[in-house]
Image 1: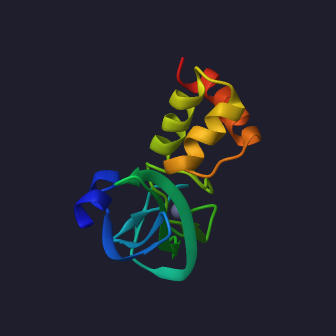
Image 2: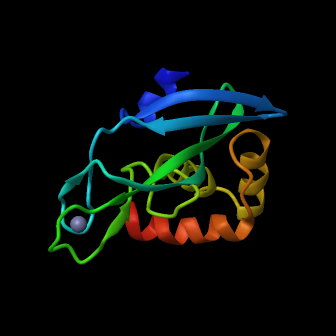
Length: 147
Ligand SMILES: [Zn+2]
């Protein structure tokens, strides 16, 4: 399972997983030793706090995937920085997003050639539970980002 997680991001380590019905719940942690402040780019190793963050990713073996990470909030050690703390972020996930970028792309690809109602059905079977309105929003976003 660690290899699947490393495909998403090499900075993640697999901790454990549980399969409930048709969903795999995976717990991961970040293995970065230092994290760069997103405001001033100074590296920090000082942890401020942890909080749970979960998001959905591409299916594995036909099962939906939900990933949970104990996300770190760090102190910025640069006295000149505009912020005292910052959260660790990842390239595969937009800040505060609930779905990985590659899952959003997959939803857009599937939804492009069918009605949003049909897309909802196809996605619900084995990829992700997603409503019609989310599909429409992603398609609009997709028009802007991927064309
Ligand atoms: Zn900073």
